[in-house]
Amino acid sequence: MVADRGDGDADAHGGPVRHIPVLLREVLAALEPQPGETIVDGTFGAGGYTAAILDAGASVIAFDRDPDAIAAGAAMVETAGGRLSLVHDNFSQMLDHTNEASLDGVVIDIGVSSMQIDEAERGFSFMRDGPLDMRMAQSGVSAADVVNRAKASDLTRIFGILGEERHAGRIARAIEAERAKQPFSTTRQLAGLIEKVSPRRPQDKIHPATRVFQALRTYVNDELGELAGALFAAERALKPGGRLVVVSFHSLEDRIVKRFFLDRSGKASGSRHMPMVAERLAGFTPIGKQPVTATDAECEANPRARSAKLRAATRTDAPAGKPDADLLPVPNLAALAALGG
Image 1 (spheres, rainbow, N blue to C red):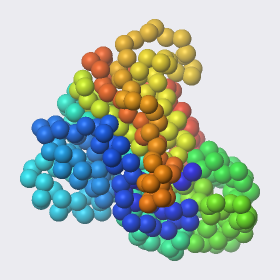
Image 2 (image 1 turned 180 degrees about the vertical axis):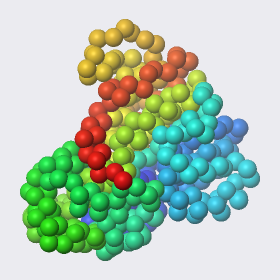
Image 3 (image 1 turned 180 degrees about the horizontal axis):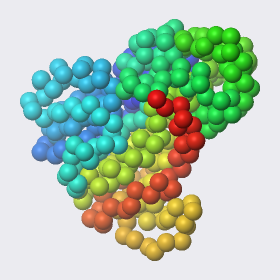
Image 4 (image 1 turned 120 degrees about the horizontal axis):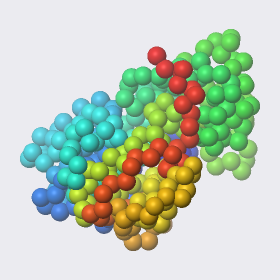
């Protein structure tokens, strides 16, 4: 399933729809923002969640790695009466900008925002031709770098693991052959090749390039690693009684969030390498039945909400657990780090 942010969408074909924060009512019900509280919005985007939290009377520290999102939010800062701070940084780094046990809530929705999808020059959508970029922070290794420089075996891993693409090997080998003739530089150039190699069947609900683009974007932005880091950081930043709310949009993200809450609620313990460890006090208490999904009415109004899952929990007064890298099911693609630079 394609992962896109709650403040917008690329539909199954990568096209934009209007700004609609996904599961907004459910997010607010779990987060319970109150006047005088301080909430972190880990993914500011177009400010949908932030605006609703401000309306409830709380103060917001909002993070976004995209400088364009930070610039666009300046007007909201002006009207927030000192209750909104925008931070140009990854949400995994929230402890660099907040104190431990200082927050009343943290909300994170994962994926790409509507503004990024809508701008062809950002290279997130294959429905609008643009440079093959996909970098949320607008710096570092681009999707073009990965496509043009990674070995076919590494591309196969990226597409197969991060995109769950069943034709990963076939597409990777075709890319390797094609780039020897001409490097890939645009979104439609790549999407066109994928359509030739893996043509759309009548029963397919999504474009043949959807999963490859998802995989490239996830890899380029280290989205799963960032999510894991944000969960560990939020645990330390929340005060007892603070709420952590996470909205995910595909199975890889949801598995990470689910595993984290299971471990931190005392229902699972240890890593996959060291499953038998001493019991410890639960750091979180789940909020209600989970996962929470969108209503039929919301899905009809905003089709991208169909894949959204919300999980939430309340921080206890137990000490934070260790940020064990092996605890969460984050795919290990460290072997591809040679692409950097």
